[in-house]
Length: 261
Image 1 (cartoon, rainbow, N blue to C red):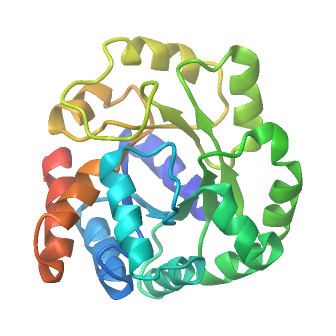
Image 2 (image 1 turned 90 degrees about the vertical axis):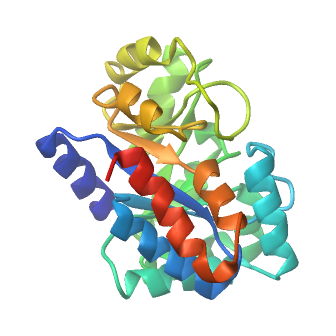
């Protein structure tokens, strides 16, 4: 959790909007995922979301769904996700966030996961389908191991719910830019910036905006309006569009393009 908090303090000091990069672990392979993760950091990513593949990713659009399916067909497990984290942590201090649905962690075992994830250098877990109201026990287990929890806030979230999400989240709140599933979009929701101004004033945590961020113009439109953006589908698509041997380079180029590096 400390690495995430240090990151957002540094971003605030630098008056810079950070970039959190997402990859689906195991696509195109476990070793390749480590290489991709490190390349994303070198390209300018400030934190990494390590996506745990799941057979029914209801919050994800077609690009990440397809990546999850490819990863599962290759036999990727939660143990592999943690091995990727361990390998990245051995070479980097970048904040690592496991992006997962609840079911894979339940099957692995909550206590076992908490201990092994913390030992692997994971900082927090972002749950896509676990509401904070139902997370008290898991949060307690994770916190005991030194592992944070992060939850999603949506444009439809009431003030009461935003407060609950804020209290349950460690390091930042993940704000969904629009209703629907993940996926690169040509244009951002026209009302997003206005909503962000209202939401940020109600939260104690920094805000990272995800779902649909895929272009340099998107980053520029959100610069200074949130604390970080999350880029996922654009990276995952680039990884899938060529030979596995050059996947890291294609992923890194997405980050450089969006940041203008």
